[in-house]
Length: 597
Image 1: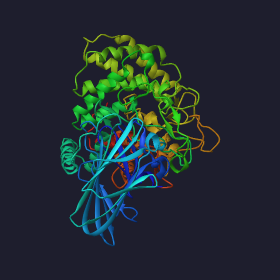
Image 2: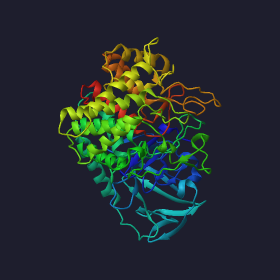
Image 3: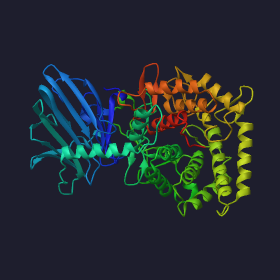
Image 4: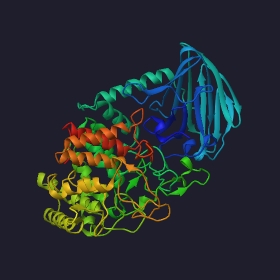
């Protein structure tokens, strides 16, 4: 099985696919990010669905990369008989999603083999395949997939797969187009693969050219921005945390979650990055998705929503999939949707404050939503919750949750001070802000060790406390901030990277999060360390941390959720929006282009 970092991402702003170095598409959900996968070999084996297109008998490609500032992937194989390249992309769709793969002979004469195994419903359902008008058509229940090649090549069925064998000479091309549509509808409109390639390259290059970043890490920033754009569901503006589910945080472990949804806590950092770099349209779309998703009773605010704002995301296990490297269970949906995470109220209010401050303009109902959230927080901020890390153990008084309650009150107070015409309880919110601040400093701070802790009365640490200067809870030069940074580095650092919090990594005992086993270093936390070091004047150390993080990107510039520094491999869902948001934010801070609080 391929390593997580062996994959590259392609997509059409509604779904995406992972392509391995060996030319195999091992993950693809159609028609949306959160739809059942038709290629699920990533979480099982080839019989769970994949599409490999490569020279016959060849292994990994010789080299690969994205074409300039785009999401078009080019993989090159240099063989004893010649050189061939495969260009993979998903054009932004009209109605139906298309996966296009163009084979081009560069030199010599190369025998090619395409093996397509479609397995609907996460690798469980084998479709019926027939020939129609030069296509291979696979149908099962509501799903239908059409495959054609230009020019037609020798194609036949074998072992419940569709195989194509052909030879390409220098200068020749063969294009494959795979198209999904509902099985009850007529055949979708055919796309011209070569014209689609030209338009895709033009669209991506134009989009990337709008970036205002002028610092020394442009390539890394642009690639992260393209990745965030690729994780955007264009019809609504929602941004998924990752396009995958159940890639493990520990090989063989149980920390395998579905990340194909939109988390509220990503919103502030995402908005700040988009606004700072000139992507106002994307920021406005994300803001508007946020307002639609959270509308309703403040008691019902969720931690995450579906790409169109769906609230029902029931978690279930898929017993027929063994999991990535036997990391079971494989899950769809996410039960954390029903947790109480008080920090998300602060994230939402902070996001809307950032949008207003960034010049997006207000929405007539946005302030009323924020007032309702503040009223809820005034009554509930003293309660324990599951916190930022979505623990599945007992609720606690997490310091980060309380800090974000302070952020909610602080941003509301700032908004009223800036525009006294807005209705609101200025004095009440000021009093709440002061009370939260006082309690956190009294109960969430360990004076003996000079550090904020994970939760009240705990000696455990939490990398989320690195955000205290970032959100303005304390100034960067406060001794408690400096002490927290040093303590986190001392106790949560592992081979140069920062873990989220302390874990009992035995396979049987549970930790604060209620789960057994361990995990890798959470990459966003290491970016937060770089930010905190930069803000406290230790820029040289911050740059060292940042360069270390840049070095763990894979060959096409992508980051997973976590990293195992001892094994030197990526862990968790991939690519991870939170990691790339962290990269962009740190690059802006180091370049002096940050617009955060």
